[in-house]
Length: 136
Image 1 (tube, rainbow, N blue to C red):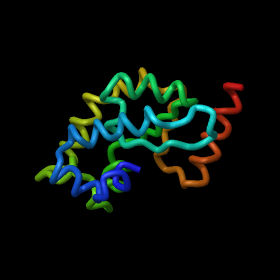
Image 2 (image 1 turned 90 degrees about the vertical axis):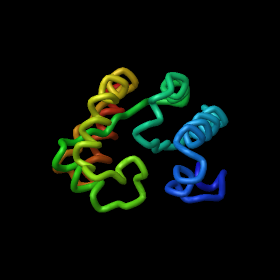
Image 3 (image 1 turned 135 degrees about the horizontal axis):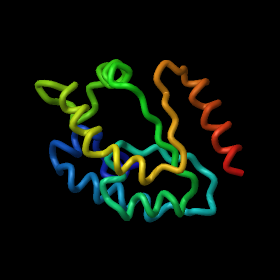
């Protein structure tokens, strides 16, 4: 939605407009979502850097944090070249640092945390469904 709103790919937004503009657009889009609408919102890992985003996500519904061990994250993220924050000399160290600083925010924001290490997409979906059912 951010890319569509700005007419640029995510990497271009970061390159041309910077991370702060991306985060501002991210917050604006979250603010504009209708809580009555039943949707799944997939945010990037930095969405919770702004406290108002975590608050807004809770207003919109159940917040689920998907986690994985470092090896799994490296495998998943290493296949993608569209992650601006990982375009560094040492992506593994960058991921470790991002996790170190963000983990407390993820924990505080999440209603449910699911470790996706070793799980297929279908298994993750099933885990989400089962976890939400337990909340009901």
